[in-house]
Length: 147
Image (tube, one colour):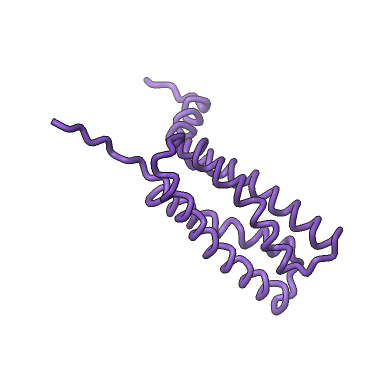
């Protein structure tokens, strides 16, 4: 009879979902930078929270793009950078627009604390962004060999 070892199953799951795990770690790091900058701009510098949201996005965007391209999707080539960066930026602009709009609704109409609102909104957007990144932006290019 085959014996079940929990560590073997965990190892299999980690290998199977390694890219998504890296995406979550990189995204979590960029998200923590986003929250930190959002807090500093809003509570320390007393900048209006919607303006702070955009500022925090700009800082986190740079970190996010590099981590996702180089680490999550293991794409160190510069060949498609001129395509990837604008696509990633476009996706992020749509994301920040949705983020700011949802922040406004959550804070102004649902009376949710701005940091908690961000903690609710970010994971929802992250799932959609992962699939867009994997399917379109950082999709592995097939190598075509000439005959």
